[in-house]
Length: 393
Length: 224
Image (tube, rainbow over all chains, first blue to last red; front, side, top):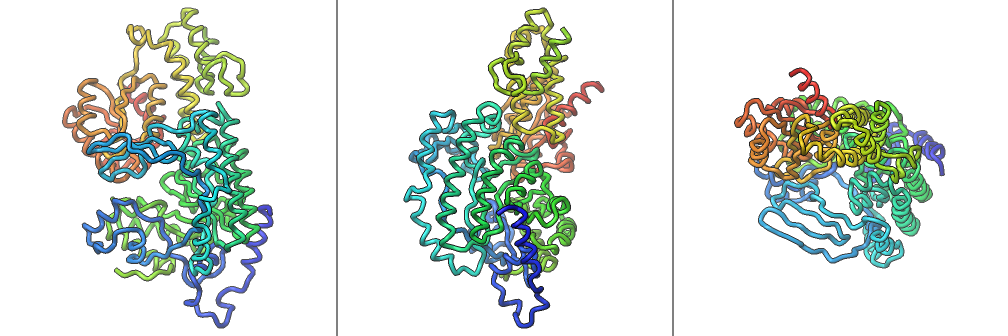
């Protein structure tokens, strides 16, 4: 199915009767799943989904000092307390299986150095300031060191499927949106190769990088083909995390030529199984690769990090309803004043009202955002954007 | 001579490391920065001329394009590789004092923060701009920055942070450095930073990209 056909589906869905034209259905009877789907298909919706990205671990700790109940200790209890709705993911393990035993190589009071199950050597600060570890060494250095990874990317490996059936059984009748992993074609390889090496491989060793990407692509697409007949999903979400403020870590042309066709293959499989919302988690400035995403059916941008240059309003102005948005609330505004929070939400309001846009903060909530600002944000979001969820504060 | 310097400039800008390098495809089989700098030195071109009239210009061109989103991280890295290949030949001239850096740039990610990608890119561009870079690494305490400044008086200090939670450590570091030397120049950068934040903590400048930091120092240098 090509992009035009997907657009036709969208147009058909938009022609369906609007809510006010329907006689009987009470808005409260719409499930979160339906609200998610209607929002993403630009249909009228009684209450938009109230989703969020989550929190850095330090944040809840800091907020407890600012009055957050002691019982709120993790993301699930925080969502419950703040009245944030949630989605669920089918358990589809499409990443490399372990090759090594996790091993601590060095440890002192300040930091711990370890080698993880895929052979990445990293150090972490033991005092909880880190968001990601500091990587010291990577397992894939050349063709020889890549070889063992082919075996752990076998889509048929039984370990991959051990939790799948149970997960499907639990989610098949879910009233909330259900997602499935949409692949990681550059992000996970980057974690195994290292940033500087993968960035220059398209120029210096393209054949090996293409082989690696193709292997990852083959694994996810084979697994999706097998998984999707067992459950109707509402969206697919991949993970790349491959952009900085200055754009992607691989050249945009390489991304278009090599990675783009994999998104196309994946999105074709998804659409064939009734899943027309395809996104991937990529922070940073996505502008240089947005065309590639959209041309290949990856139609939803997430988390649309504003300070890095990925502005939801600009994306919608440029691409119209071809681009769906999930995220896009500038987190920096929340650490400032109520006036700036209002201004940011007012800026987004007309775009949220267009549909196809689930506004959430553009990354996890950092610890420098005061709890009172976050509560103000949630309250204003409910009022302005008409989102659901029942807060307990 | 001018022709040779121009060829070196092109190699740096386009990331042509050496003759064996397959990149860029349209320069395959041609000499790269490695061979051409060696050739220039052999022909009697002063190391300072190679640095100032070829390497810095080539790296500046790619840095500028990077800040304008015309080229991307991979291109900047290839240029940095070509620069490293060229600088290897110039090292003895710096050691003997025949060639001089524009100054020393002390660089590190502030305490509590282990991210180094942005910092490393800044280091590459500053080196390409003719600065000697003293890289203190990640999770660097204010005291360690101060110690490095004392060891390298008159240096410029660059602080990097990716986390909003560690940005506060920038303020502490700037304060300590300015207490030691009110004239010390401190630049800050990192994904969550803004110009307003830089001003608030007393830093001399903020740049959203490496070239901006280099341009700031070049402008300041030309004014003095």
